[in-house]
Image (cartoon, rainbow, N blue to C red):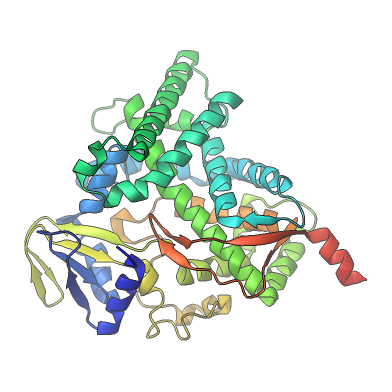
Length: 431
């Protein structure tokens, strides 16, 4: 509890492929550290595993969703939601993302320190909420929803680690969380009812969810089901995107040569026009920067599965009910797979022949539960970084040490940087 990330990282020093630990009394948890075994767990053994205690708890907190479901229900939910992440839909989202990034940057004061972590959380929330509700909410309702989502997102990480009885204590934290969660559900339900009554397609994700039907029953999603999907998407997507963007900006500030190459690529590919969806594949160096950020600073610190029957993993036989876990953060820093692992080096991804073996690099998971929003997330990151870098430069204070903490994600504890206008820097360079 004092240093959860440090503890999980330290298990690698044992050099053991699997290590048994106790996360709570009476529950057997096996941390899998060998990439080949992780690959087996996520692919070959997937039919005999469910998602484990942490996902059970997430379902209790946010409702049943594609993230928490397993088995046949997961397959059905995934097919229902897949259209929201199709190429044509993401193309429409890019304009919304870029508008939100531009508005966010316009609110930063030149020469003043900026809490980058909080700024990226706010930006990620805005991008997500506007993508989901672009044409469905007025400004006042949108601001209330954003505020409630922020409370839920910040509270889930704590609630996941608490025993069930602690949630029932009349603490201010619990009351605030429950009130915000109820507020999100009320807002979404009202938006669903109004959109259904109007019969309009507003072109946002909410309209798409209203068109989705259960492939077995032919019934549309209920308001409660839609709200559960949106709540889970907000928590899982916003928190991770905010963390990766924060770390990417941190590394660009620490590595001016890398930042200069990104800017040169943006100038070559975009000229003076804004970034569009087709540009995502035309910015290879920026993509390598994001990939290296996902390696060195992956936001996921513990992913769980659970055996539903006696299961053979490698040379070990595990009884039903065994919790399995792996840590992307530790996995991606293994020196056996990634030479000089603590060095930020986007060029390590320049040679496809040097790619790590299956199970060694899992930025979006793997197997049937691989993140279905991976392309959406990468588009979001490329759009945000490309738009921000062309307007401002964020500068670290000399000697500033950034600590990482593991809550819902691995994130910087405090990341304050000074905002400098990019055009002024370029003018100074020319002079």
